[in-house]
Amino acid sequence: MNVTTRSCGASERVGDMAAGPPLRPGRRYPWRDGLMIVQETFTGKNRIAANFYNSDRWQQFRPLEQLFLRCFGGLPGARRQILRHLPDLRGRWLLEVGIGDGENVALLPRDVHIAGVDIAQRPLAACRDRFPNRGLFLALAEGEHLPFADQTFDAALCVGGFNFFTDPVAALAEMSRVVKPGGRIVVADELPNLRDYGWGHLLGFPQFDVWLMERFWFGPEFTQLALTNELDVAAVARQALGPHHIRAIWRGFGYCIVGTPRHHGDYS
Ligand SMILES: C[S@@+](CC[C@H](N)C(=O)[O-])C[C@H]1O[C@@H](n2cnc3c(N)ncnc32)[C@H](O)[C@@H]1O
Image (tube, rainbow, N blue to C red; front, side):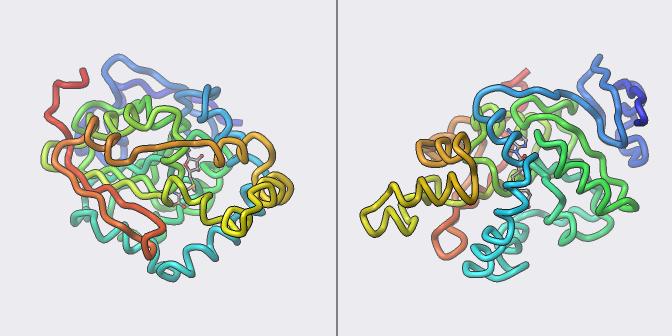
């Protein structure tokens, strides 16, 4: 195991791509095996989500997620419905919140400088191993508490997972804080009530969905979260972003928030 520390001073030089994006003033975080460790334990929904994404269950569920995307825009078409809302980022910095194992990284031009945070160490490590020469800056951290300095990034992206964030307003406000004025924030996920389209729900046997999800896909905790979670996407975006709009994607089974940061200073 390789442990080092990097202070904000080491990465304070804005524009120095090798040093990484600047951190919040005065913050120091340890590095382990190429990942900056901001936070290792999580609470609320983030704890449940981190357990799920670190488990074999996520690996087993992945083919079904790919099938969903294939049906609703094809691969990589389903992702391009989201990524097309990013500005031209060549030579500039993008933050991906919930980067996972880097499916979007593979679709972005090589000269985009990418920082990624995630609450799950296993996919984050997979992302590191998948793109060893891409110069990614990867941190174990939650979207609700980003380690980066104000107005650091040209854009922020979040694809999947957002519906189950412990505090989605705080996470969007953090994206707003770290994106430069005039930058872009793009957040997409499935419809929060997608569960209503489960086979069991549609046929009037919701218990069938519970059984299927618990037994084969998510396990008891994440199933409970998926079946009870509520999110008012429009209200969340209104509270945290500047001017924005919300688009339907994936034939109406998903949403994509495309917005700009709020005036800076609101969150300091
Ligand atoms: C469905 S996966 C999507 C991964 C990747 N963005 C993609 O498009 O393939 C959702 C990811 O978000 C991460 N995640 C969930 N809640 C998070 C939070 N509050 N902060 C940061 N990452 C989070 C999960 O650990 C998981 O890796």
